[in-house]
Amino acid sequence: MRTLSLRDWLRSLREQRVRTLTTLAGIGWGTFSVVAMMAFGEGLEGIMQERAAGLGRGIVIAWPGTTTRSHAGFPEGRALRFTRADVLSLLDDVPQLEAVCPEYSARAQVRRGELVFRTQVNGVNPVYGVLRTQNVELGGRFLNDADLSGERRVAFLGDKIKRQLFGAEDAVGRTLVVLDTPFTVVGVMEPKLQDSDYDGDDDSRICIPATTHERVFGRRYVDDFLFRARDTRETAAAIEAVDAALGRRVGYHPDDAGALLVWDTTEDEQIRRYIFTAMDILLGGAGLFTLLVGAVGVGNLMFLLVRQRTREIGIQMAVGARPRWIQQEVLMQTALLVTIGGAAGFSGAFAVSAVVGATPLAATLGRPHVSPAVALGTIGLLAAVGLLAGWFPARRAARMDPVEALSS
Amino acid sequence: MIELRGIGRDYASGDATVHALSDVDLEIETGEMLTLLGPSGSGKSTLLHLLGCLDRPTHGSYHLLGRDVSRLDRNQLAAVRGEQIGFVFQRFHLMPRSTALENVALPLRFAGVGARERRARAADLLRRVGLEDRRHHRPAELSGGQQQRVAIARALAADPPLILADEPTGNLDSQVGGEIVDLLLELHSEGRTVVVITHDEGLAARTERTVRLLDGRVFADERVAPDNG
Image (tube, rainbow over all chains, first blue to last red; front, side, top):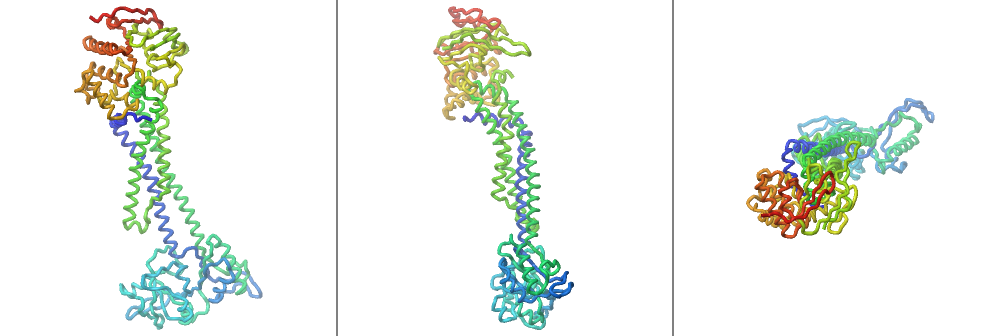
């Protein structure tokens, strides 16, 4: 293809300044809608996932319930109780499980010097830190196996209770008192986002070894326990196996729906995924529609320009321009319009995403992120839009009869 | 150079068929200059469009430089126009948004000539038609005579062997028109084949051959010594 007179065409665009600008704005706005909406959706999804991960990734929380049917000589209505050993036996009995952690839960008075707080003090195993996404601040550690077997009086603090007790000071190695028993702080949790909980936020929680908890609080039965399947897609099967294994061990009917109460967080994740897919479709669809309206605008402008330039097209043909070149030329001009509008929309979406990501809004909206997939998809979409908008005007231009065009 | 055999061109007009041209035989030698003369509606414009490969005949054959161009497709016809034919129109038909220089360079663009050479050749041609100081003017800033000179320069840009002029003086006063005819005669004297359409007997008298058309047929084909005194 030979390039025709681009300069000449730009001059005729200038004569249609208002139309050109509104058309460019249409494509720009459409592109902005698609990209920005997808970017914001992705940012929101990211922060929601992060918040959800604050509770734990792919975990199930289980509580002992009350039997609803008689079994093995026991009447119905029996409140079940699980020991730490019952819970830990699951690791051997249920091969689908990756990890299991018993949890004792208590509210207790916590003291450091003059400062006194009532807060959550939980007795757990070392794996708790991983299951509940409790990352450790530099300079500390989570509870370990030696703490557990030695019934050590050590504590791991949530970041908020640490601030309340120690302020900005380093807490590791310092002492605090729980129920008149002194504990040494071994670590502090990194601040995290958490959108759900079952006995208070982790930032106000103090974790101590389960063994120590049993001794200090005089407990024999766990309040709840956590587990995670090796493959989180197999979580439902794992729950069933856990239910059956515990039923055999403590004596309840495997089909008893009241015996074991579970919160399967992987179900929430499933729901979240559905919601976000629906949101992507909705928002993307709205953007797509805007873009299509923009395409109609571009097509219109190109038709107008072709009609306005009928005589010029006739002249070009008379002096040797092939109809095929004219057609390609109109397509190129359309592509140029779409590219300019699209680039403007893209830049706008990038700019707004960057600005929102840098402001406090990011805490609620997340960091909008233009993923390569969205970018490539939008570019592909714009190319399709350009072709669609340019095709018919281009064909009309190429099919002009030079004699008629010259006499217009 | 040009050989028309049994050329006819029909148009559908409503239910009727209009025979704009019927049964035209015409031969034009290389280097000849001739006038196609006829009243309006005689078919001379149709004949010029056919000669200029802007249109295709309904019947008959057209050989241009030994090649049958009557059955070429639209893209091929455009190529023939670009390489073999230079047009000069009554209404000048310059690109209104382009400068004189850009207008003259336009055919070179389609011939694939590079930008620098296009500009140089267009400037030479404008100098030749006496408009070197008007090269950056738009058509609207030029007089009719100047516009027609630009058009002639453009017709010469791709150095075509055949120049077709359609009422080249029709929109000009007699003095300016005379200068344009002088320019066309000059092209003829350089060896180019020039065909001029007109209904102006005076113009016809300045060419050596006149073909008269009436009702779509060749009515007379006269060869006389041109009166260029």
